[in-house]
Length: 408
Ligand code: NAI
Image (cartoon, rainbow, N blue to C red; front, side, top):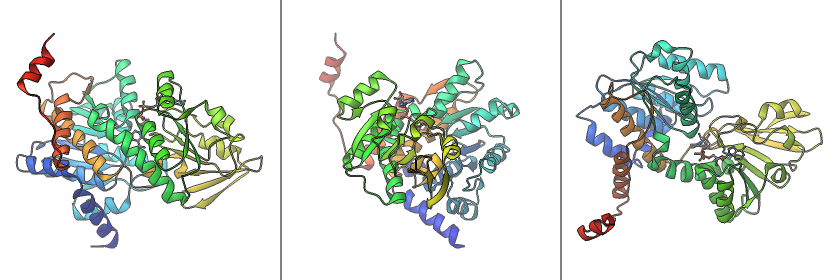
């Protein structure tokens, strides 16, 4: 085995031993092979956990082709392990080149999939616009992230959605843990391992106090930072304030922050008008799905000069003489500069994905072309499985309690 493949295989088996939910699903479905006859494209951040999910789909009957959901999140050793060790088809490469990245999306669709697991909605957008021919035979899509769900909801609202879609992101076993604890921990992992700086004593500005933002802000506080939250939703802003964070507009936070994390799903959150306000040495990072939250192109155009400060960190000298730094070109910092969410977190999220895809496959030709939530039983089944794997048990309602709770 060559060194790259060997590294990928080791990473996959390290992750697999901490994925009790996927192990259990493997045990349960490996002989039955419920996905037999299903052609599937898995489009997700292609690292060890995703590779294990793709292999699980393969082992339980599907023909699986895999591609990446972000140019910088594909790990080439994982591609090597899937191709050389697992003998699976993969169209992905770690690259900064957006054109090369998109070519792989089109190549993956050549499978003519019956099911798509999408992360961010790129494949869903392609099959609903340029390549509508792929809609024939497509039985469903399961979407992994908030931004993808927002895009698919817009498609549904405009009456253009042609296949049933499960918003796997909206399952409680997904967003309560993945968006909050997963993003919370891995964003700081990415920032710390890339910069080698302290977090304690710093002023951290978190833009967006949704499920991800809550995690990022909470973990920053745990590391000893003073945290400012920026928001556009008065309820979320109030929640941040009551959680003990300072709240203010970005125009006021820009001169105060040492480290910025945008995680809104929106564009231009740190925009041109903020550049001159930033402190010398400010570090800008993004954890939202697309690289549009920090106006990197505008910064590029505005800077007097730029340089590679360290691998994955770019320096920008501003006309006012100050320098600011961007990690991972403004792409998801926890993935572009780290290994993504912790393994156990993705075990839960991918449990949701597996059972959502199974639901789509078992109910093919019966579901309307609409956006659905993951069925509540799936959420509960996965939570129970997870608790069991953690050797934790809980109380059950007595008959008397059930009667009491149901009485008026
Ligand atoms: P959410 O919808 O729960 O929260 C987003 C928050 O941003 C909302 O409270 C909204 O009011 C706020 N917001 C919108 N525009 C804003 C602006 N201009 N300034 C300040 N706040 C603004 O969404 P969630 O689940 O927290 O996801 C956020 C983004 O992170 C999405 O793009 C999602 O796809 C992505 N994501 C990234 C992950 C990662 O691993 N880095 C994991 C999961 C989601």
